[in-house]
Length: 469
Image 1 (cartoon, rainbow, N blue to C red):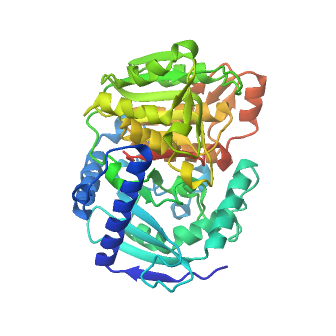
Image 2: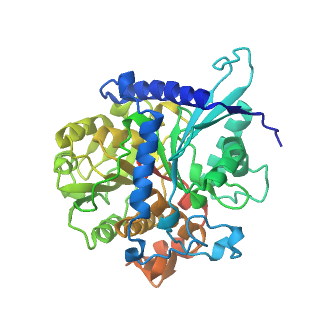
């Protein structure tokens, strides 16, 4: 096992690292997506970030968590662990609003020659933790770049093939990546009682399946509510205003030259249930219905169930397939400008995939969210079977609709999948609290659910981008 060299940064060093890296990242992301260039004066200060964290923490903690019908037992809430005396596998998903405590973690990769000690031959990660109060806390962690890349490639392969991740072995890829990125920071996270992390990740660190990293007791995606952003400066961190607004649900189930997505009609129906929603399916799902209709400020959320590919070569090379033809990612900038100040709260894209390991395509659906001017986005790093995809998104939406913050809604959904609590009953997929998520499954679809959805393949690649709340 590689012994890591860890250096504590002073608050001034941590602040400087964050500001320098964020300015560089913002400029790169803005240029890559064709967004307006930013100046240094618009960069959020540490005080600005802490103010946002305090405001959302107070808003969530003062909210009426009981109205969601969810457990608020502080013994098994978001801090679920073996310390409760109950096996993790037996715990049901539970949101404890009283202990909600979000933080921002900036991850910066420094290759040889990019550091304060330019003669160093080793790579480093600089980790800067911003909490709701107090000074920023920073660490510089030495890593072996080759070991890091090898662990990431092995994790991708094991997840894609649904192989056992062997998390009981400290040398397994999931444990190795956790050890290199998060282990040095874990004492600080525990001391500060952090429940939620917004990961502001440098280029090269954005396509890591963070939820599938394992600390020896739990997967990271079970322990924390997680969200990811390529740029804090381009992320709306203000407390969202209200829970109203309509839902626009669009999808396609049949394609020329692409695999059908048979469950899309059921996914749209289930997500729209009980909502003020409009559904556009197959031929009704056109580029105009996506880009023009979604610009209507009465819609607060947009859910898109279709194939999408995020490829190297910039926004013009990445595309979403509507029922009548593809739409390039670059066209979403028009949606941003048409909505003006009425930004989307959430845009979701199921059945998408990002080209893993390719730096040019890392922005993926994060780029789509930024192009569209959305506060948050949900999407997947890899293509999943449509039964698992649909069930995951419907369950996450049910929790969001119940008042659970977005990052925690995905966290609780991951917990339910990992613990085998998303199950088959007859021809239905049943989620937490016995809610029916999907119905009318055919024999092959039932077989997939019956074989189990607990492997991280089914839930580790679905990410929340942008604001965690």
